[in-house]
Length: 233
View 1: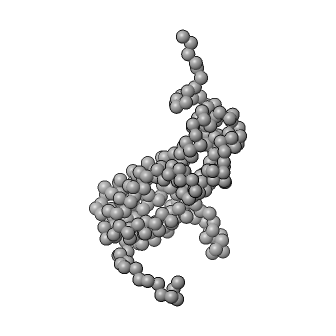
View 2 (view 1 turned 180 degrees about the vertical axis):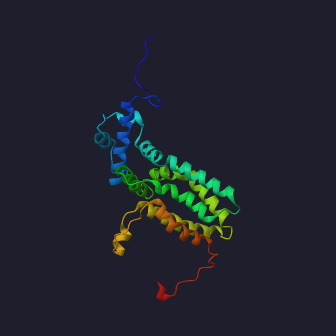
View 3 (view 1 turned 90 degrees about the horizontal axis):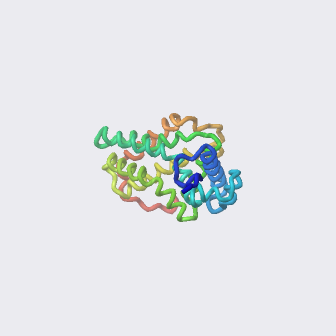
């Protein structure tokens, strides 16, 4: 019986043409999602921007949600693996782990995302996705970070045994906020300060960022919060 030679979905031996179409679709979706958000882009618009036929999206990915998962995997899969490896090393090196070492392991690799056109699109997309009104997209993005995020929280909790759960939560919120702002590099602070400063390389950013965050985590517990006085509100 004669068998079809057409490539099947899920095969890893697709030829250069199929791989090129797949990458074009990811590039196009990454750009459009960054500009207009997930809900603001149709599959038809993605295939048109990629110069692909209308069936290409379904053939390569199956759904629009699968496309955004693949975009994150393409950009952050190897980076997250490196973050987990470095954190494992930090936890094994001392007990309690060194706060600065765990922070550097978690934050440093994410700052290696460069400033090519595609990488800039991804930075914008990553920031938008965490606040996307579509709960399914937020779930998709958050699930992608579950493993590395859980490992980070566990490592910092071990490194900061002096902090209760609530206080650890608020200090980690500050860590995440600083990391996301530095990674986004949106230029807002430069405008406010009136300076033509740049975040420079990842090493430059980490040189200033890690000591500040480590010092904040190492502070003794602040204790019971005092109510604000009227003139402080």
